[in-house]
Structures are given as C-alpha cells and as structure tokens.
Length: 291
Image (tube, rainbow, N blue to C red; front, side):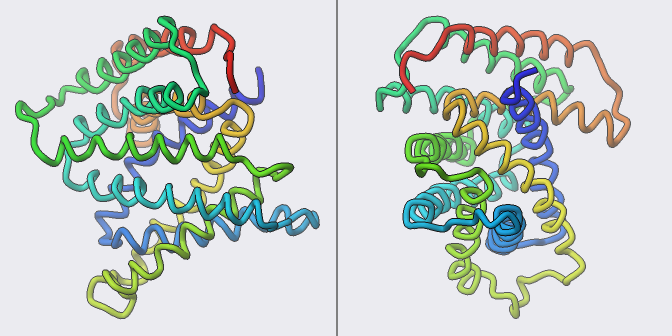
C-alpha cells in the first residue's frame, strides 16, 4: 500500500474524530480561544521535539513566514468551525463540510493548479452523495428550513480552501514535515493569545476548572498525528487530493461511534463506503496535469 494512501486514511480517520472532540470540549465549557491557544502550543512543541532531537530544527525565514501564513489562514476557519458546530445541527454541518472538495477544486481551477475535467467534477458529486447517504440514513433529519446559521456555516469550507491552497502552493524549500507543522502550530497558538486575553482571559469567570482541560490535552495528542498526515499529503499530493479525506471522515465518524459506543452497524454504512470508493477512483484515476 502506498505511503500516501496510509496517510490519507489516517487523516480521514482523525478528521472523523474531530466533531466528537469539538462537542466534548464544548460540554466542558472550554472557550474557543483557549482551545486554539493551548492545543496550538502543545502540538507545536511536541512536533518540534523530533527535529530538535535530530539536530534538524531549522527555523529559517522561509519556514517562519510559511508557518505564520498557515497559522493565520488556519485560525479563522478553525475558530469558525468550533463556533458553528455549537449552533448548527450535526447532520446539517456534516453536509456543509462535505462540500469542501468542491470549493478547493474551484480555487485550484481559478489559480491554474488544476484543469476542468468531467471525471473530477463527477467524482466530487459522487463523493458528496456518499456523505449525504450516510448522514441521512442515520435516522436524523436535516432541518426543513435554511437558517442564517446554516448559510453562514458555508464560510467554513470556503475559507478552509484558502488555507489548503496556501499550504500546498508555498511549501518552503527543503523543509521537513515536523518543522513545518511545529511552526504553524506554535504561530496558531501565539496569534490567538490576544483574542484569549480580550474575550476569555484565564483569570475570568469564562475559564472552566483546570480539570476540564484534559479534553484539550486529548485533542492535542490526536492532532499531532493529524498534522503530520496533513502536511505529508499536502507536500506530496497537493491540496485537492488531501481535502478528499473529508469524504473518509464521514464514515469514519460512524465507525468510531460503532467501535467506541457500541452503536449498531447497518447496511447503509457499507453502501456509503462503496459510493466513496467510486468517488475517490473518479477523482484520482486521471493523472494531474499541473502541480
């Protein structure tokens, strides 16, 4: 099995855990700014330890600027995702996020990193169908009306597409995955500190008890692996290929629930996975013309 496929599956599985982590941290009352600051710094320091121990931690100007750019572009949709996941029904939000590959493809077309092709467009539509089948078959219904919250939530995958495009287009020369991931994560935490001090300073009543921060620690441990997988794919395969892991994350979320909480499996999950395989084949059976 190709290494990039292993990273792809890993990324999708960890993205599948993300909604549960968001909900868990919300239930424990962690302010959004605290989540970004503490997880960013923890993940950044942890990723830096490996190249530091090997004597390969080189934070040159290119890596620093790249990390700062990624962090700035990541923090906005990250905060928005944490926010909207608390105001939009899970089924609706999952379908909205499933449109992410479409927005990434549009941006890739506009910037000349991809060319229009019917097979790719068909793959995007089939991939969305895979997510829709699985979500709607859960026995939950999507709201009958489209609220302003739902419309506003579409900004999340759109803004994330800018982050993915930047991460793929401006990879610093000769930089390794760990160093890049460390730079982005540390800058992500540092950039959020002023917002934390203004909106929810640690000494205010908005801060939960110290025991609640174990959720942020758990998320950090998982996101260390997620960052490695993400940057490995961004560097090797590009933004459009990487974002397709969002299709894997939807069935992964259900499989995690079956494994952890003992929820019963049903034929719909296998139907969704079969459709997903068709979507991934359509999207990747044709070689990229541009990189």
